[in-house]
Image (cartoon, rainbow, N blue to C red; front, side, top):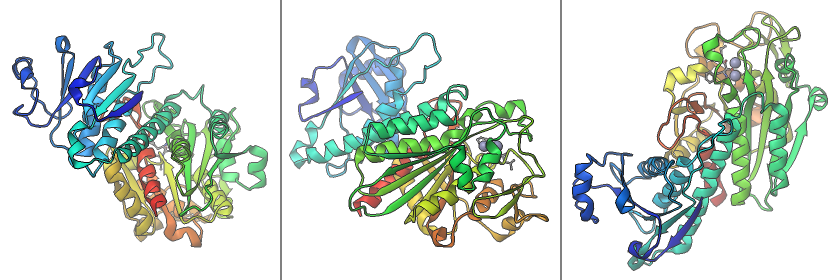
Length: 485
Ligand code: BES
Ligand code: ZN
Ligand code: ZN
């Protein structure tokens, strides 16, 4: 999808279809000529509601009020409504509420790219999105001496962000038969080939040498050998050094603590954290952000078999801590434990974030649309919360506490991999990870449980059925801010 910015009046632009956004529910604004028709068709201009006047080549979409998040979902809905139509070019006015603020413009671009996404790799007949070009007129802001360069930058950032999100969605949506640890490593290698990113892959031999025995134990019963990926973006004088760690369970059957049938479907999405890290690294390099970013992914498949790790095993993590296994389905934290230790050994970072579809309890706590942010220190958590607000993603904090921490106690090892109480599972998982954060990273770390929003089986806002690319947009906003200094 291409975007053109122009100062030409909207009526002078040639396009197959025009998109008109109705914010005023009384239709008092321009384009009164269609007022009657819109009324007749029952169009109420509620948020995301669309109405295509086919003979006029005009598409209307409603919006409750002019905000970035409303813009994102309205445009996504409009683009989606054209998915089976034959229009190639679309024109739209910019609707910026403030000529100095390009946020609405960026949201418009993001909404279009995110809304146009569809995953049809496994469909025999593909439904190609026909809109190839969107022309945005910023004519009405001319008198404010609008900075067209600033608009172009916002457009470009929006496009990179949304395309990286779609890139992540694609990886997550691919089946476990087609995407296993080696595949994820190859995706990372391909990213590095086409960019300035550096890529290092650790195979089982290196993982053993690095004493990543808990990760290896989780991987053991699978025919697909594990990989740890390390991608690096290294500008000359970076404003900060940031490490990102992602859970890349290419399939989570639960292991010997086997998941019930209903809970196993969609577990191809357990690689969402790792896939988000890959998407973020792609965008960071495309934006050439002035921050050093290290992306680590623990790519593993959790299966059953004669060689599987078991409840009752005691494993030794990379940092020497012993873990009593009481449930092999709490595998993500085991993989992350080792990868977090490895990442901290390799990089002394200013901030450390991890992304994981870690617990069903996070979904119970905050619902399907929101990520849970946890950690010991306020600063990294608040950075994420602030970044979320402009990104289009939802995130909320869950506080750690000492009562829940005690429920991870083991009688025979340093810690258990599950808590001994029924509730608070998102927090206990976060507090388990805390055990693998070094003293000098303690106040620099935040854990993001994306189990809710990473994979949702219906359309919501600008997100499609299936993978949403959760974590990508929020993190890019945060990194962009750090890069500005
Ligand atoms: N990958 C799952 C968590 C999950 C659940 C992600 C639903 C997305 C949607 C994780 O590995 C898991 O199985 N966690 C267990 C932990 C339990 C055994 C303490 C869970 O949430 O039930
Ligand atoms: Zn699991
Ligand atoms: Zn899992």
